[in-house]
Amino acid sequence: MKRILSVAASFLVTLGTSLSFAQTDADNFYKSTLVNMEKVSFSNQYKMKVAGNLFLPKDMKAGETYPAIIVGHPMGAVKEQSANLYATKMAERGFVTLAIDLSFWGGSEGEPRNSVSPEIYAEDFSAAVDFLGTRPFVDRNRIGVIGICGSGSFAISAAKIDPRLKAIATISMYNMGTASRNGLKHALTLEQRKQIIAEAAEQRYAEFLGGETKYTGGTVHELTPDSSPIEREFYEFYRTERGEFTPEGATPPDHHAPHPGKQHEVHELLSVCRYRDHLTAPHALHRRRECTLTRIQRRRLQQGCRAQRIIHRARCRPCGPLRPGQPHPVRQAGFFL
Image (cartoon, rainbow, N blue to C red; front, side, top):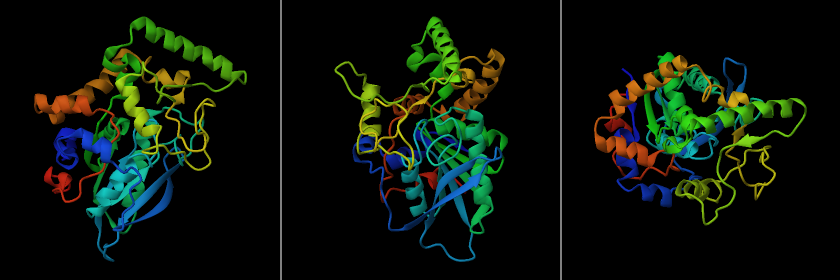
């Protein structure tokens, strides 16, 4: 039976009761002496190459099979920004782990770059199961997934139609559809939403005629006295040495970005496809998608007011390392038992 675990249920013990510890002390680029890492790639069913980093415990024994975990990165990030860290830490605990770049991002294929396509993102997780389940050292009946931020919801979408994913854990899970339609704390009005759609539609004409590709969203390039706490929090990770990363061969899509050789832009394409699933889909379709997620969240995640408060407070924060010496959180929660 699938177990959908929230940050409150599955990782609170690991991260500790103080979220500031995770944000202050996280070593995003942590390397382990107990784990081997190798770059891998495989195709999804759209014939697009998905890039990943495979982490193997050094004490693996020949002829034995091990449980495996796929780790998905935050929305707009790449695997080197927190996904590798969680994959490394779980490999230290005896799991075979695979951190992937979602299609259109990082080392994975997909054009135009930085496109938002939730359906293909979900397929990437199933393709990762294809890859892991065909490794001789992986127990294909014990494959799970950790989804960070937006990948939490994409992983659940994959698990709804892929029974091979036996367990799902989410870290600061974020519903990107709701965020795009309504803004944080439902800040967007109906008129603002209509304006966004109109701008995206007009941008299609510009790009069709050869105009410059336009991007939207993402982390600010600089802080000002008026910057919000959320902008400051994201800037402190994605725009500093704590978490900034540009994949090989990539260039920041915004030419105004500082430190172009170092930084990975956390921006998405501004086009109608950017909003097709998030803003303009028929109400019945949104009800079907969102109600399914809501039922899962209520049944599995909202066990108490405290858990719900933690989910909202921790949502989409840069995630830190697992504390060494802490009890194994996932096994405590029944993962793969």
